[in-house]
Length: 138
Image 1 (tube, rainbow, N blue to C red):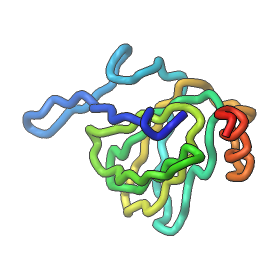
Image 2 (cartoon, rainbow, N blue to C red):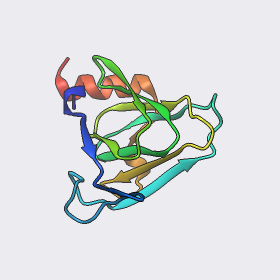
Image 3 (cartoon, one colour):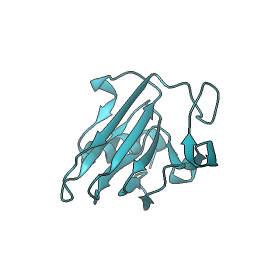
């Protein structure tokens, strides 16, 4: 996949005396989630992720605090500041990702299209580059 396939996902939010944000079947995720997990209490200097997925798609966002999300499609890299609990990003399969610069109190949520499967992960960047080269013929 290419970075141009990454797209914003607006989390529906009802505003009034505070906010209620929600997800429900059919909206606004581009897939039916099979797994949800969240990252919290990550020290500022720690980098999470540092892998790609062969098939798994994800929607990722910060429900509290902020972090940087670097995405790499094997040809270009792009960074995103994740700091709005109503704004998520859809990540198609085949992208290298690194999460860094976690602020104190950050909670990062990930909705995934598949259940955990170690065989779906590419954990070495040079293996990722070879995988992308094989998939794209470049």
